[in-house]
Length: 389
Image 1 (cartoon, rainbow, N blue to C red):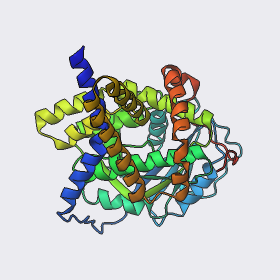
Image 2: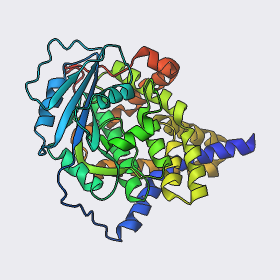
Image 3: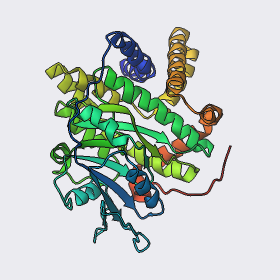
């Protein structure tokens, strides 16, 4: 039991210091100046897949933003699953509105419904949520990485607004993950983690990875990234390919969304062992490092466990308690550095006092994680502005 206790402490403690380790590797590697060279090839043909489930009130906004792209060679496929489309009308022939006859209730089913209804053979596809907005240079920024030879690219999901404390804290979390699991992980020679939207692939890669699977519930991005990295490819991170994302603004949204995410982690974290084993066997730094990231528990879980371990050791082993204190301090420094490098909005800093409340609601989510996919399939978004700062 003592050995298991020590191993579990090391496992949790490693996740506290991992951000600083990634930053240290990045600093060392950045001394070797790397430039991104992109070719001037003709525009690749994109299928932009926009998925909606039950709600259509935000679709006109995302379509307007896509039509303002500084790019011409694309078509928009809107998959309106279980939606009333009677009030949806688009007069642009680049927009293909699809309403499945049967309820799909699955991201990948919606994606393949669009793929099976492509009206021409596109080279690449990118996945956008119905609550997103895209930057005018989104596709051009993705192309910089495709043109360098990557076949999977994750963009940056920035917050649309910070109207509530929950939205601001959600945005802070995203900045943290984009910096360490996106920018630094990719720059350190591994792969960026996928974020559910704002990501792009060659159509063939997407088919190769998921066509043989029927994925229900949250977590298709977890399966997809495991498949891509497992095949030996790297997922690039395009920090200037920006998708603006609607953040969770209400506690009920937060609980339902996080319950699905927590359920997903418990369901798929074992992928990390598979990739670590592959990485060691094939001497693949990409697979090894990515596998370590997949084994990391959700942020609030390893933070709460770290505080518990600190308190326990403070009572029984003060020397180890000092190590825990230093590790927690390093994590806090790393978190604040991510906000600084991510140029966080002042509202995000103002929201940090609400972290205990944010964690409390995630504990509720943890208790509801077992039946998360039965409670809700997609996050409901509201247009009100309650709970402002």
